[in-house]
Image 1 (spheres, chains in turn cyan, green):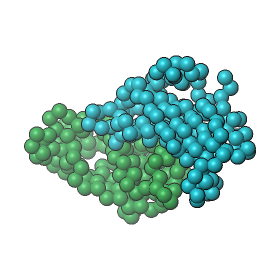
Image 2 (tube, chains in turn brown, blue; image 1 turned 180 degrees about the vertical axis):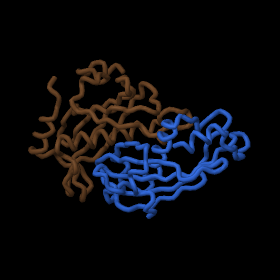
Image 3 (cartoon, rainbow over the protein chains, first blue to last red; image 1 turned 90 degrees about the vertical axis):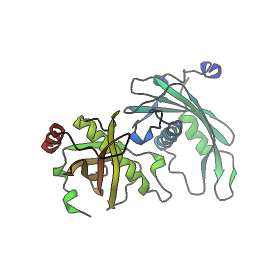
Image 4 (spheres, rainbow over the protein chains, first blue to last red; image 1 turned 135 degrees about the vertical axis):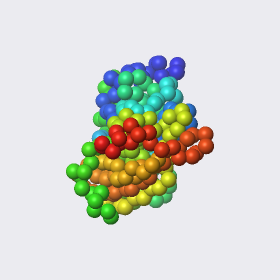
Length: 149
Length: 139
């Protein structure tokens, strides 16, 4: 976790996220270990991302071009158990030339950080299937949504 | 659709869920397979409310029948509410009726399903104990 420790605000701190999405866990999210399956963490991060983009005003994307996920990295810090309601924090980490990185964290009902995710979405032209530079108007929206540090 | 199941006033237990982006299919509707999961979640919470262990060390409930009637597509984002009640109590089985509403309170689907209480080792049906039966009937 050395890299995350250098990140400010601490990605494991709920207070470091302006945008939080809450979801009750489902019985079917459990696996034979009687904990929440690892794949469900990814599903929760996904729905948290979409809610974040909706809050920023970018989702649904235009039909022709928009963001497309190209990388997901998840660190599992703690098991989650049913029943509980989890909170997913999402914030923009970096806006690049043709991509944007998000930092996300998943918190259980007690507020303990159970997982961290880092995702990269490319700005893509859907018809041509290739990435394109982020246009200025979108860049302005993305940078405006970045947390003040 | 069974109109007996669409009367909201017949349900004492309601369970709310929040839809996830991944619940949607490619036409922006909640996929039909997700209905099964939503109804299941409501039944589990129903039993927690009843306070009866349905996954015990010796015996538990298994699903033997499930049917869904879909009246209206569920749209993302949103919340769902599911009402659950007993329709019939057998010797060792129970038939549920369920009603799924969208955030606006519109009827989206109804479901009927049957669980049988079985011994875990043998999968043989186990009748409800008389005191459990009385408690369940009182609901």
